[in-house]
Image (cartoon, rainbow, N blue to C red; front, side, top):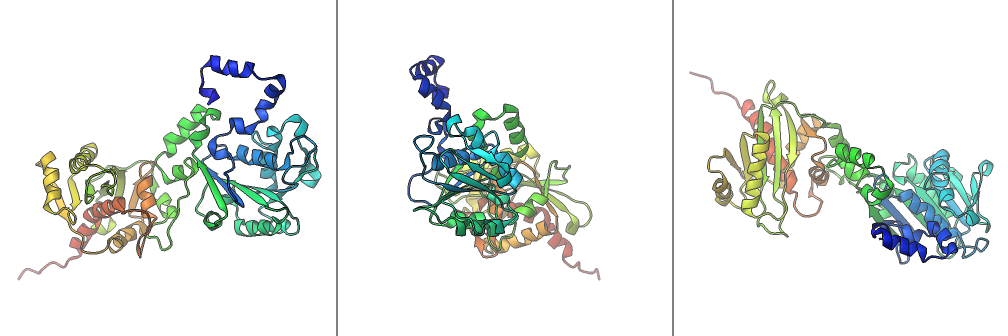
Length: 442
């Protein structure tokens, strides 16, 4: 990129431009745009630009509208003549999409800049193209008008998203191939998932850092320090759509409600391991989860805390054994718990080759993954498990794909399996022993 080139290269490039080219350069978006901000090729109806906060979504939407309505000269027509601008409220459309720092007015060159007609809530270009402003709070306002293009902003947070989206689709009927752009930070809402599943939809995606050249360093440092590693961070900063599977044992809302900033002093800590069948780059991950428990009152009242997900991908047997033992050392764990269904005695043998004296418990699965996970999910429903914030995003993502029917994500739920073994050892097994009737002395 030119911005990354040495200063002499940049100066030589600019000095070679004519005066007209130099004046036009700031408005040639294809020159400045990041990959996710440029329309994909092909025959699509809906382009979803899904990204983190500050990833440049608004600028991409504004520039797409420009490209649709502007002709080769200021008074010549473009591809589209009637555009819908739809946001959560009229004020947000006006302040962000129209007049914002990355809005349509700020992006337009002087000879093509549209006029904002406040009383009619619309933009009018010199070539006669018109963009009307609509609020998603009033879906019925989209009944009647018709368009050949639309820009929809922050769809995933609209309260009446389904109704507003449907009304817009009925109005998007002018021209040969009417198109629309959706700029949004992803959220697990049905309307967005329905759009993404449509065969006529294309998607570009970028995290917040993709646009770091235009963001304050202090902002990036602050939000990453607070939200890195959390599901909220993956959604709001990485721009990743995190879904709860139908019938999920855990949901995003449940897990967010159970997060804590600080883990209290714990009475007992374990590291649980779900070893892979083999150890190479394409094998399943080795699930390694650290958890502890506060033992106040009978075991039925104990509260567990999930502290760290130290899962490894593609590690050798010795590699994951060393990682598990390192996690024990970091957290002062009392025991290493490992499933031995796959490796039998070899699992303990590998671990003891690294540390012969480690307190070790072998566990063997006699039921399916979902059946084993259900009692653990019940602990969460009772509020008896907490998660350390900013540490467990990938584990939580797997948890939200575990259903009563089984795991509906990709690969194997190694992180969830390790979590289940940890909480089984810390809470469920002690509670079961506590409930067993004691024999009377004769």
